[in-house]
Length: 376
Image 1 (tube, rainbow, N blue to C red):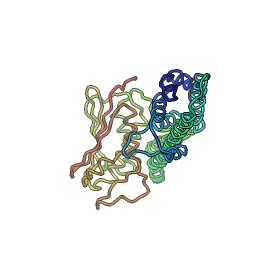
Image 2 (cartoon, rainbow, N blue to C red):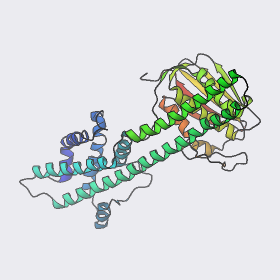
Image 3 (cartoon, one colour):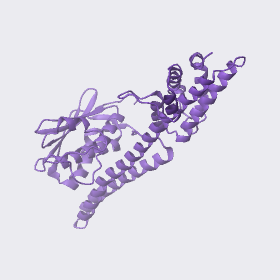
Image 4 (cartoon, one colour):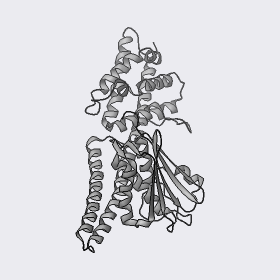
């Protein structure tokens, strides 16, 4: 029996052994379901079997043995590449990823040799099978490394980006405290210092959690019942302390009670309002509107200023994208272009979405959040 046919016939047995081996990848595999452990095993095996059945030249054979198989332009991710991304997000390390492929190779060859004990196995099939596994491993390692590097860079950028705002509030408030003469004023300003310090501590906790668990990308939320209008007002109070009370206006409409992660939602709002202040008309106030509807709560942040070009609007939520100043040039400063990316990630973590529109008069960032997300 040719190896391609054997793999197609014995896929279930091979996948069962894949799953059993993946379950030994502790501690990350401890709470993974059968589907999560199997991941893209069937698709990888299908790709290997198809590769074995496809004619190839000696040069193609040589390239594949080095993980350099030709890649089709605009082709979707291979099963091996997608598998790498999912394993990285789950918290696997590179050694565990490679171990899966070593175990897969050993499993297929052992089962195949056992099945062909009375026959002479096809030597060319064995060579080509090893080349196909090497190619799949090369694809996985490449995407795994890219995913973990991006996660690390985004985390560090997110941490640096989000620490600036509360730190600036602490510095401005400390300066104001030095000029206060009444105890009541000092108590109110001290409360601001405490809240901003707590936010900074929370950001550092996020970094430490990531380092310990190596969970990869994504933002986790811990929803509680909260009044979105009230928590927005609280966050804007901190921002007004930095930018001035007349710079930001708030309106609240309807019932804004919802299930949300308070800290993450305030983090999202700080990013949106900070972006509006940075790129909007400095003579016009930034308007924030919170509105409750039947099944969701919306937050809109509006600023006056030049229109955002459609091409820029399509990329505006991508990481490392920088806005344009009033002259249409890339904005200066030390920003990393992560604020809107973080805001979108937080909205999606709540089961919501965020969109941007710009018409030459106003630029609006509109967040829609389900009042009670699925699972809460």
